[in-house]
Figure 1 (cartoon, rainbow, N blue to C red):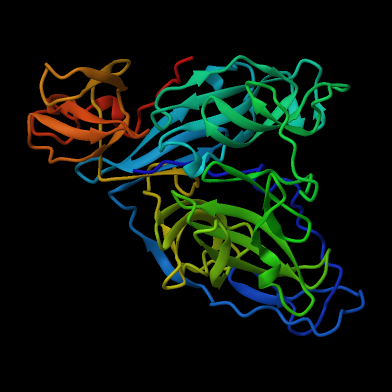
Figure 2: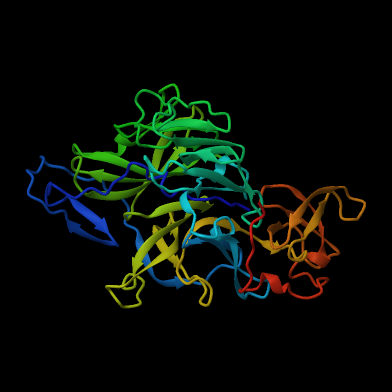
Length: 460
């Protein structure tokens, strides 16, 4: 079972979609919404730019049925909601994070839902949010601005709140819920302004000389890597571990957008843009990199991409969950001028993009920030209560922890026994009583609190 959070602002820190200023040649195209069109402008073209060939991605018509063994955490107006199917297949939603639980007068100003990815055990989530004052942008905040971190071990069912920091902070990456690398800005005059630092120690993380100052570091199996201005990923010693320049042709330039490692960082999915020149529009690519025994990455595949297709999680060795906006015409639903924000599955082998049908009557279209894979089942201990996870399938088994009501756990044994073997969202394995597991024949009744109208207020 895997649960990660995608990086929003921090993954794209410093990335602005520039106004195109050049029309390099007839072969220079801008990919947008599945179609291509020549970039427009009046600047002088550069000579003979030929963009790299890549396998075209086909957008499959329609929307795939929401899978039984997938739960999505989606963000909606500052709230986090979980969508999944109950044991009988009924789609359900649950409110995981309600900003008004922490601020009764205004919506919290989110900085980021953290990209924790494979750097952390599955199930660990983190949010950086402005809890006092105003945090409207890096370098623009009120004197009383405070940022707090909200962390969860159980996929967002329960939360812990940190002591606040002054100023603002974006979570760049993390090695644990007690160890973040932050891009920190505090009040004017503070020496930490604009620098990366470790939280909670406050130790400044000095990037290599070649690193771009407008890019957050990338965490590859606990190794911090940094984008350089010429399209390389380098470690803290400046050693190149990936060179995007190897994929550029004909004098074009590259712009890295997002990097998504798989669980052991042996494969990377990199979304990037190939440009005829700085300041021009280019074509978007997905590159898949494989790591060799020396820790170097070499490209193994290149596919077409689309702007703002942000990766969320690897679902398998050959498929990614991502988000993008598709027109209804692309989905074969008519309405060429209408679009929908949808979670999508990119099949790298087949080069296809499939929209997931978020069940009607729940949230409609949503932006997935986390994914949890089954087969899983839901703990039914009663609202506000928890269920002991034990070392053995009996009351004599020592308690390992108490799992919160409504948490999803990976099912490792059938539901028809008195005890069910499960793995928690942060990777702890043990046994729980089947009497308190949804879908078990021993369970008294379905849990009404977990139906589509249920909400959950985070614990402070």
